[in-house]
Image (cartoon, rainbow, N blue to C red; front, side):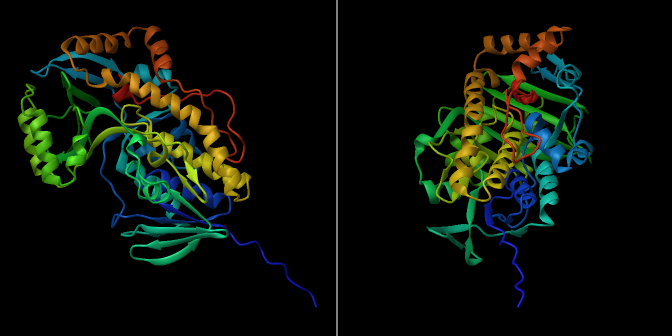
Length: 422
């Protein structure tokens, strides 16, 4: 009697979080022969968030996923980053063409929600997705994980990955909570979008800054305008918010005395919005990115903060590397999880240190700091010097392997977020 051999069972991986890191990981895990499942607390894909500049490591991963053309099509090409005074007159400006040339045109700006949508659509056709649900409890044994979902009952998985952001549920369940892991950098940030704003500077990122406060706006398609508000605070006021109206009051208090001519209209539009991103600018620094059969990814493991500028790119790069190491180890988490961390942690720690040293320049707290920032911005426009400064400021020293199952080697190029960095 002839016996037919059975194909080995695909290892199952539950990924908590459907932002950018989670769907990227799901895509690459499936490429390596795993069976990923995404679970997301929100009832639908979150489409809000601030405008981000996308390049470097994330650009490379997107290209290998086959979504780079879509990102370019849906993204925006900024002509200039312009800082204005209270009357709206330009005080300093940098041409984005200088930045793009230095980055070999591998640069585009895109709202975070649109990038998340693109990545999710690439992964969803071959990934089970559970919305309006999350992980309530995890019990690990020698053979796998019993995961209790808040709505979906109990299920069995081989591995679990927390890609659920800075306030990670998985991190709290598996590693516990320790305030020493969260480093507040002295700022809070908010973002929202409105329609038919009275001023439209297309292809320009316009910012007004007063000591300790900064508001930026950018014109989107269909008559919409996106705003990013950042202000210094001695403690993370976002922790005292969480409710839309409370967050609006905190922002009103922070910006109502700013003298920019556009402030009254911006605050009026803020009161009208029903979707608002609001949080403290913080970093996550863990003693380990994994425990047992559970690993953490993206902001849940190593949030570099808004000041680092590459959160989305680093999340995608981490997902690519984690999937590659699991593929190399044939699903053995005891080998793959430490390799993933050993590869990526030194690079991440350098990015976090750079962000901390940059914090005082992000929204300068003094008039002198603002003048120095204007001087630095204008220097970028100087021929030759501008390209050299850009590469010095934004270059990374990490190279993604062509094959995600190979180890990362040598130096490559990547860059810091333009609108945050300058």
